[in-house]
Image (cartoon, rainbow, N blue to C red; front, side, top):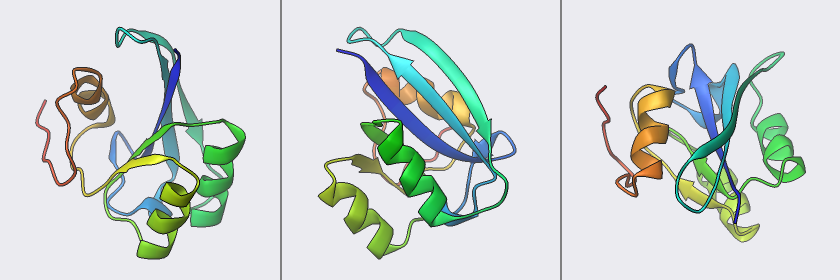
Length: 111
């Protein structure tokens, strides 16, 4: 099964807040945790609504982010999106930890 992961970024780090992201790291991975496709989307400006819309239109299964408003968290989980929040670290390192099944909410990931 292919899984899509969505990580809001500020430069190359996980954005400190979901709604302040200026870019997004999107990765498609197989069941063995191998990355099949990885891309960075540059956003025209920060917007929680735009990010949620992208999550839904891209059929994302997992969002990994820093802080996130409760209303946005509730919306995504209601839509059956896994949300791993309060994560700090570079987007690449966080993605590696997630694919190794070694990432939990609230973690600080060092390269």
